[in-house]
Every structure is written in C-alpha cells, then in structure tokens.
Length: 250
Ligand SMILES: Nc1ncnc2c1ncn2[C@@H]1O[C@H](COP(=O)(O)OP(=O)(O)OP(=O)(O)O)[C@@H](O)[C@H]1O
Ligand SMILES: [Mg+2]
Image (cartoon, rainbow, N blue to C red):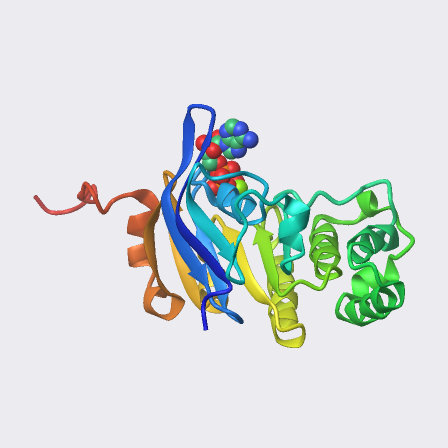
C-alpha cells in the first residue's frame, strides 16, 4: 500500500524567497510523523503546501494517491485532510460550540455531526464544560484543544498540526499530546505534526524529519534518534562545518 502523504521533491517560493528546496517526505497510514526545525525552516510552508494553501513550483504532492497540485484547500480537505494551523485561528467572538459546528458543517450531515460532537466532547471535558463561552476567553491550552477538536469534526483521516506546543506550559503540552495520540487510536487518524523542539515529540512520533533552511537535513525513525545528537547536528547545522566545543582540548 502506498503512503497516505507523498511529498515528492517540492520547491516552494514566496516571491524571491525560496522557502522549500527539493523537500520529499512521506507519511504512511496510521503513522505519527513529526517535522522538527528552527524558526523559518519551512515547516509551516510544508504543511500549508500539503493542505493546498500554497503551490509548489516544482515537484508533486499526493494525498491518498491523488495529486493536490492545482486543487483548492477545500478540495484537498475532501481527500480526508484537516489542518490545525499555527496560531490556532479559532473564532474568538464565537462560542466553543459555534467553533465546533463550523468544523462539523463541512461534513454536511447534521445528525452525524451532532453525534461526532458528543463523542468528541467526551475526549475534551474542559471544552464540554465551556460550550457557551466565547472561544476568545479560553486559556491558550483550551484554545489549542478547541482547534484540534474543530479539525477532527471534519472526520479527517489525516490531521496536520502546526506547532501544537507553541506558548503552552509543559503540563498542558502533555495533555494535548495525550489527546492527539488518543485520537489516533479512536479515530484511526494519521498525524503529521510540526514542532520547534524535539524534546517531547521524540517519545510520541514514529518518524522524524529535521528541516532547516528549507531542506530536509535528517530523517529517520524516532527510536533511532532518541539520544538527540544527530538531531542537534541537523537542527543547528554543525554537520557541515564541525565546530570544536569551546572547552575542547587543543
Ligand atoms: N506568506 C509568506 N510570504 C513571504 N514569506 C513567507 C511567507 N510565509 C513564510 N515565509 C518565509 O518562508 C520561510 C519559511 O517560513 P515558515 O513559516 O514555513 O517557517 P517555519 O519553519 O514554520 O517557522 P516557525 O517555526 O517560525 O513557524 C521564512 O523565511 C518565512 O519568512
Ligand atoms: Mg511555522
């Protein structure tokens, strides 16, 4: 069986700035794959490209074997993909429930959306308690949970999550990951997640890609990368020009 996501040598640019150069990656059905990289590495660009939000000028992207090139984001979503964007983009003046309805709306079937919402809220008790709150009044962690829950309302088979940890306390990050991994089991979700730091993700991901300067610097099973050394090299670029530690003997 082919991969659910196949990114094949894509190049993406914004005007003169080349954000991705010859990036290839794949995600198999049921996998948890993480893209790690520093600020400006191109992580968000990669997820946005997969979701149809920005078009590569070379290479191909297939979701479930179908090329997404030339498709609009809503057409790509119909292939079973949902993106939790960086910064969450929830509607602050709408209630939690209204935000979730917007997710369910895409699905079309009202009865099914209602049943989905009930099932989903069992996983997000804090959201269930705050259904009538304006989403803007939620804490950062709750807003992230809402963004994930809303994305899951569209019943995706593939969830792309852009920096779920951003700005959250370690305990809350753990809760978010617990929910994501729980969803993977219950909803048979495949996950592609961006993070700036590998600290937590190494324990949860099956495979890792390290992106820097718009290129894939390293890829491999998370289990092989747990000591962190190879990732540090790829992340900071020590690999190309070895730098002696300051206190190294001459
Ligand atoms: N809409 C845009 N227009 C112009 N340049 C952009 C745009 N979006 C991103 N870029 C540039 O493309 C490069 C990659 O950005 P991208 O947002 O993909 O990185 P990132 O790895 O997600 O970074 P961060 O960890 O800060 O979110 C950066 O140099 C960024 O400034
Ligand atoms: Mg980003």
